[in-house]
Image (tube, rainbow, N blue to C red; front, side, top):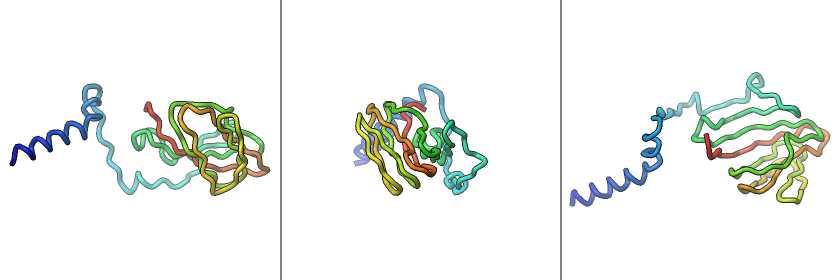
Length: 146
């Protein structure tokens, strides 16, 4: 009976930690400890990163939680952060304020606040401000390569 439990436990350890086994052959990274202090990120204007069309603020950058990110983008009226593009990672936008034109695979749709937009991996997409006030939206993404 003990040998069955040992086998199940061994398989669980082997397959449950297969990513860690691969990582151990490279550089051993210390395990991140999550605390109430580093799990709460209140917006701080002093920590914003300026862009050509506004600014961005990382609520969770790709070094925080295994590549998963949450970023606030603020775009001035009638501008876009960048041209439509595509990449291997999929991502969500969530419009907080303003009017966005969402471009996906050759088509566009104009949306307002409290709207989520999904961009599948390797599909051309973009978002731009088509309103007369700032556009504020969250970008939620997991980077494949940290």
